[in-house]
Length: 211
Image (cartoon, rainbow, N blue to C red):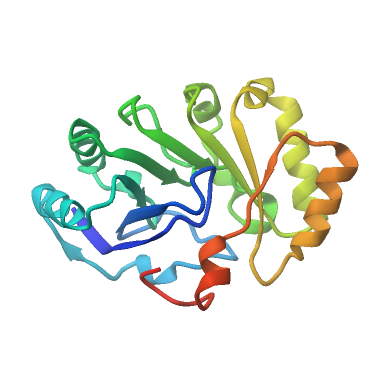
């Protein structure tokens, strides 16, 4: 499989934020979000055998692993890698855009699925059938650029009642959306969602790689 980078850092997102985590970033993405912060993963990377990836993760001495991208589900070996990590006792997060079928993922993994808001320019790429395929432990993320994105996200939550049974993360586009505004809107609505900040960008430089 083609790997952009493997590194150990502090998990900056999801309900696992703040915990040490090993990130396996794959190469390639089928989307081009306007606010993308990992464009280096579109093409850069090297071919690695699944066993070589597992060995590098094991050397990190960390039990939380995230498979991310790019879009990791583009890699045909992604499901095998996730299952092998789970069999080895790791907690595995899989971050995906929601544009590809998530049903191939081992049910023991925790899928963190991005529902692309209009501000991303990619909302038409969403595979809506994935919402019904979410398992109880899975999480859903909306990256919000402005008030229009917020209102759209709220509309989606109303359209798909099953999302009320999942962890829902609202994340402001870093450097574009003032998180205070997003916090105010959530409080005004009494919306039962998690306000998510990209913790790693506040700890290190926003454009730093490998963190």
